[in-house]
Image (cartoon, rainbow, N blue to C red; front, side, top):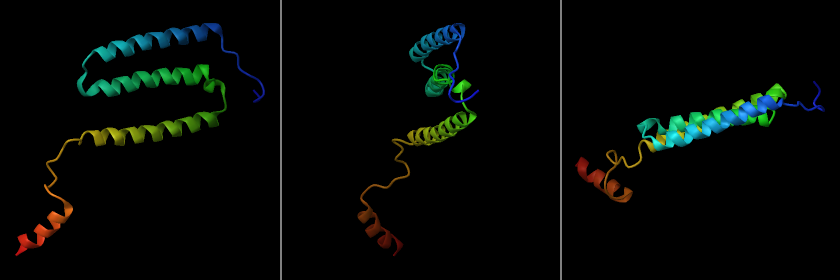
Length: 117
């Protein structure tokens, strides 16, 4: 298939994808009403990832496009995932002041030589 021609997605496929997206949206709303503890974000991200994959593959035509575009998308998703993991790891330590000292840096430096005497 050359790059000049377009792939026509069958109506049956489009209908199935739209119905699936609708069901996943209902699942998203249901999941938001439940308290899943620390699994709230992973469940929401999985559902959103599935929905985004369907839209990208079918409606944006990536399924029928050149493989290089899929590779570029995959690399971008991996980098976004790594970024998100680092952000979520950082949020685990918000409010954790057990490893900090009171006072300013200057006060801490002035106290350190006095304590060693």
